[in-house]
Length: 243
Image (tube, rainbow, N blue to C red; front, side, top):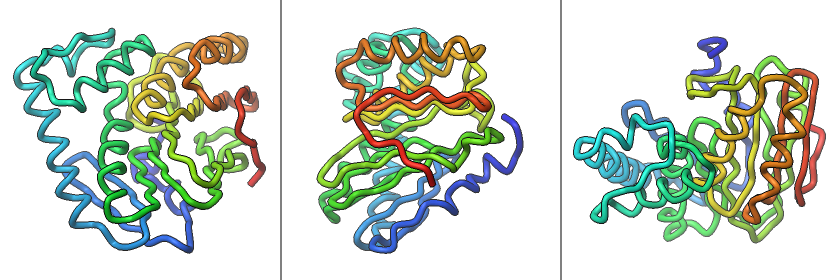
């Protein structure tokens, strides 16, 4: 965690979509920035409370779910969001809470598609996006010279999880020092978990190639972007753009 300004999510000033309505929803430490065809603040807040409660209640029954940094097997009666977090984080080789921000964004985003045919839910740098139009997603990478200078182009008619992990920005736990590791896949839960895994791998610029090769093992991965200081590692099918 480099500075309090990052916790304040100043990067949101760069999030613009003139054709969509933007609003913020906060419940305890969850802070979502949502774009939709109309203001769905009330619906989003109810969903956020609902899914937070499911996760919190499950943690009361089994605190290991929150504490473990390794793959976790959920109980048979666990809520679906807990099972999906466990499944995708196991695939990435990390604990389930490494995917919690992506899970909240995805579950709320999918529910809000019942009210708006385009939805973008951002949760601490982890994004669920379902778009009819081409969208640009910038990469915020703290003090790196690449920060907010590059991004990826999201094609129209797609639904993706675009998640970013950092060892230098924000409060999330990382054992690496990358300024940003962005993963794009069809699942925000998997993108979040795998971004954490790759972020943990980056200790020097030599690790960028190793992390890119690791990401290529997963057929779900559509795009990887790794930012470490002035160094940049890129692999995938999406178009990288200068901003």
